[in-house]
Image 1 (cartoon, rainbow, N blue to C red):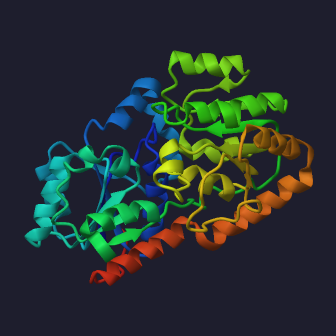
Image 2 (image 1 turned 90 degrees about the vertical axis):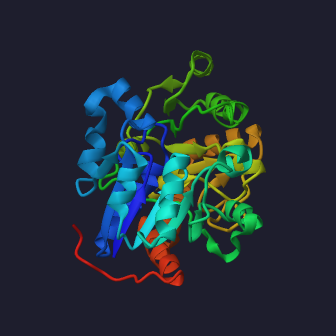
Amino acid sequence: MRIAYFTHSLASCWNHGNAHFLRGVLRELIALGHRVEAHEPAGAWSLENLRRDHGEAGLNAYRAAYPDLSSLTYGKAGLAVERAAGADLVIVHEWNEPALIAALGRARKLGHVGTLLFHDTHHRAVSAPQEMAAFDLSGYDGILAFGAALAEVYRAQGWGGRAFVWHEAADTRLFRPPAEPGPRQGLVWIGNWGDGERTQELETFLFRPAQAAGLPLDIYGVRYPEAARATLARYGARYHGWAPNAAVADLFARHLATVHVPRRFYVEALPGIPTIRVFEALACGIPLASAPWEDAEGLFAGGADYLVARDGAAMERHLRALRADAGLREALSAHGLATIRARHTCRHRAEELLGIAAGLGTAVTMEAAQ
């Protein structure tokens, strides 16, 4: 069948985490025999920032890793809707303009497109509900929510059984252990500074325990203001700036371990949503230690897939153990990798999506990829 996905940007992962999952799942849908297309607005904020900081060379890693993917750009919502006409399944990410979201809903009501789904991979439904209220979803067939807690928010708004849980996952064609093990040293943390949503947590669960454990710490990400960089320098962490997501597996392969520090909204308001870096780290076989979060859906086995630290002192103990105990590192690596391969790959999610579409009456038929 023909599938159209409307994204903020497929090409840029500069402060755009959905691009990680989207690339992987679109590639799997193509491999399953479907005709897939991605649409994105001209002048997308993430892509413009990437080009400003790194020029066209900033896209090299993406293009090399995903030669089978490309996207169509549009200037106005009307052109985008025209291009989507006749698609069997249309998915629209929440990081799109209200005008586009409404226009696609109207197209669905008129029968110009097939099944229409809204894909939410953020906490705005609880952190900024006034922004989400600007979206006219009346023409949509269902919601794809990246966690059960978020799906419940939509169910409370009347979506009922049409709010589906569709977790992110690892693109295991890209995120995998190195073919040949090499030397590893210190910790790596890959994440954006954000908007103060986890500043205290980063200090408690990453900067301070890494320094106390005597582990070198490499930091990659964007939107680190001067005050944030001063904090990193105070703890002896090395800041490297942005890294393309397609290069992250190689970064993981050079370090002993990594740390997960969830944003506050995913701890307090939307428990059970790990975000994609957990999937990607475990898929690469790098040992992971995590700040506390409630795995409400039982996605992983805490203590076996990764270590859980309830406070900063516990994180320091975990990091010291990871530095000293090769057996512990090997056990975590093997268990986490097995969990990803069994349940949390982009192939799993592609198949889940097709099942959701079929349940909504979409004719899920194969056709040659174009």
